[in-house]
Structures are given as C-alpha cells and as structure tokens.
Image (cartoon, rainbow, N blue to C red):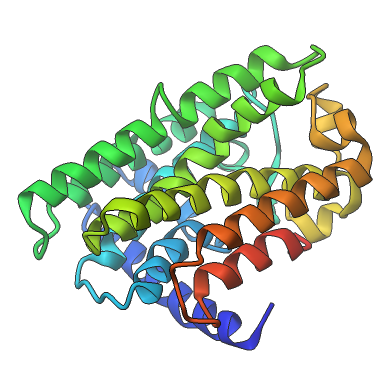
Length: 295
C-alpha cells in the first residue's frame, strides 16, 4: 500500500467511525439489548473499504460534499448488517468475524437478526435525512442503495451463493454470484460519489466500469486469501469456502488461473480511470490495494 493511500485510509477511517458512532448514539432510546448488539458489530472495526471508496471517488473528482461521510456511513451500516446475517447458523454458520466472536455467538441468534434488521433500516433513515443534499439526489442515493443491497443485488447474490453450495458452477455462474453478493455494494459506493459529483455521460460510464471490475477483483482476492492466508490474518476462519463446499475461483481455475483473472480485472479497472489525469488517483491506488491485500 502506498503512503498516500495509507494516510488517506488512516485519516478517513476515523472520520467514518466517528460518523457511525454519532448515528448509533442517536438510537440510545431503543431497547438496550438491541443497542448493544448493534454497537458490538459496528465497533468491531474493519477496513471500512466501502465508505472509503465513496470518499476516494469524490477526492479524485475534486468534489467536497458535506453529507458524503454520512452517506458513506450508511453504506457501512448495510455492509455490517449483511455480515451479521451471513454469519448466522442458517447461512454460513461462522463463529469468528474481524477477529472476534460473531454477533450471534455473543448476543444470540434472534438479537443478531434484529440488530441486522435495525441497521438496514437505519441506513435508509440516514440517507433520507441528509441535511445538505437536494431531494432528487437523496432519492437517487436511496434508490442506488436499495437496488445494490436488495433482491437485485446483494441479497440475490446470497441466494445464488446458498443455492450453489455443493454444486459444480461455471466461471460465468460464479461471477454472477459475486457481481451481486460483493460487487453490487462496492459499485454502489462509486456511484454514490458520482452522484454527489453530478458525473454524467462517458465519464459516468467509465467510473461504473471501474466499479464493476474492482468488485469482481475484490471477490477473487477473497477467494485466493481463503486458501493462502491464516485465520489470524483474515480475522475469520480460513478455508471456510472449502468447508462449506462452495465453488471458488481457485477451485475452478487453479490458484495461478485465479491470479491471472485477478490481474485482468485489475487492469480493466485501471484502464477505465483514464479520464482521471491524476497519477496519484486514490481510486487507482484502491485498485492496487484490493489485489495486493493480504487480509
């Protein structure tokens, strides 16, 4: 990771964490058990890649918007809810997330489900109350997040993922799963930034192409790390894909084949950013980070 990106991430992770804390603090009149379960997963940490991508997009487009951090935090609420639900016994049945026991292990399955439900609705409440954003842009943000996280996006990907367990999938089928399960929300982050910047035409198309390719690259690297990294490095159980009998890129293409696919998607993402003339583009640096990360 380059020094510029490392500094950007360190500074803005704290900003995002502060926003998440403020959002949750406004919910203190809810039942204590629910608040505690929500707080547990929000404060578990994480790289905050998704909200940082929103802010990196705006940085590259030379746009400052007062509501960007809150909108970015809304996406992180959706991501966190999805992790809580993915870890449930009825889903992936994981007991470790971000190096800590999963939410349902600590707070019980029912409370974990409800905490995830509450975070999902809270995300849209945040977007509906952005104080410095035009109503038409608020509607656009809500629509983007709803589509990315719902039955045409992340939820669809989870369904296809469950249905694919124990089956031999093609590369095309696997990519469809990942475009929805992982890629849709990552793409939404870039589109949030583009919406705040009022990006139009061929530049909007190009940045959406970038988003699509880094979404797939992110998941390929996840698949690679699942077989090459340790549980300590990942903060979750290594080898979980194999134990769940899931098809992965290394399984279909071999480790070297998966790395070649990763490199191709990385190159396509970089090429899509040709209209951004800054050689130190944060989106370009994020593309590098996504394919080079070790956890």
